[in-house]
Amino acid sequence: MDLRSRFTEELKASMRAGDAARTSTLRMIMAKLKDTDIAARPSGVDKVPDEQVVAMLRGMAKSRRESVEMYRQGNRPELAAKEEAEIAVIEGFLPQQMDEAATTAAVEAAIVETGASSIKEMGKVMAALKAKHAATLDMAKVGPIVKAKLGG
Image 1 (cartoon, helix red, strand yellow):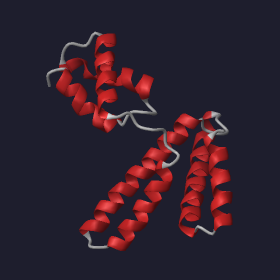
Image 2 (tube, one colour):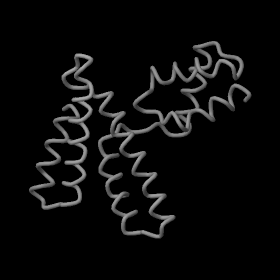
Image 3 (spheres, one colour):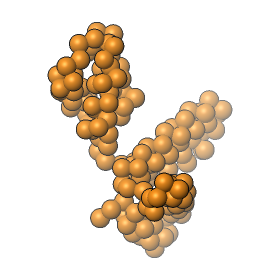
């Protein structure tokens, strides 16, 4: 089942269950997806592929994490809790992220594959990782690992 179908089915289930918070978050996801589809129309794409949907979800989760930090700094724990609940719903649709050991192994494999030997070639390694593991790697966490492996 593709992500669009999962969103629709989950929305129906949460509405039947009377889960207002989950329903609200799913509606937000559906609205953002529709906006993403509309933005892609000029390039001839009617519905964006699942890879772009995953990227959209990651962006939504990231912005909510930033909001949580801001709410905590502003001493607004109730709003932080609401954002954390939204993050939990959004992350339920994201593919499982690699753990630390698997991430390190993927970085080492990419370094060998690209033949990178210095920090100047970090871009090649990052591009190779993104091409192979975009859905399962958090690229923000990968950067420091690649830098350390290349002696940066």
